[in-house]
Length: 223
Image 1 (cartoon, helix red, strand yellow):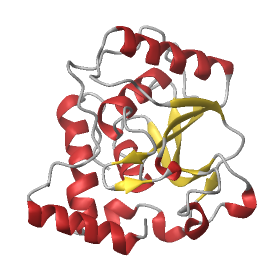
Image 2 (cartoon, helix red, strand yellow; image 1 turned 180 degrees about the vertical axis):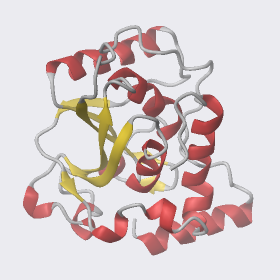
Image 3 (cartoon, one colour; image 1 turned 60 degrees about the vertical axis):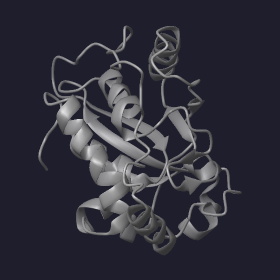
Image 4 (cartoon, one colour; image 1 turned 135 degrees about the horizontal axis):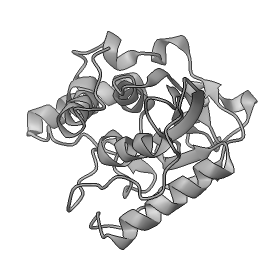
């Protein structure tokens, strides 16, 4: 979906009163912390995580406000280098998902804590190939792991959430190996922060950051 179309969809939603469609997860109960997680590092240690959960604008905005996150970059994962550009990814036929690469300090935040934010406020893990007003495989829910440890933690957490019946519907999040991450075009970076009054951002992405602040005050950072 183009930026223009996203804005039009959000504006229509506001006219119809559908301002709550922000693709936020709606769990039946509070999402617990992962029972299986990586230990917090004893000293500064940069690590990387890659998540896909709908339009990368909102996912990037959420993780830019998480303590311990050094950077969050919008981009593409799941396809080849030659198709890693917005107009082609938007066809839904490249294999890419709009993704966010998160570089974080493992002494301040753990991989499991990032996953908890991902499942709680960054997106709805029960929506298949869509998030809110955005539809297509490029908006699928996915965790692109870069180590056996990340794979184990992610799979164990999904099993934990399913066993606890945290969501009323089945989690459809894919857990797949990261082949490569390709940064998106410059105009997609920091989009929510640079365009806070755009209708799509106001109705779809700004609420996610507010939910992060309310649900995880100890992890929230003004940036």
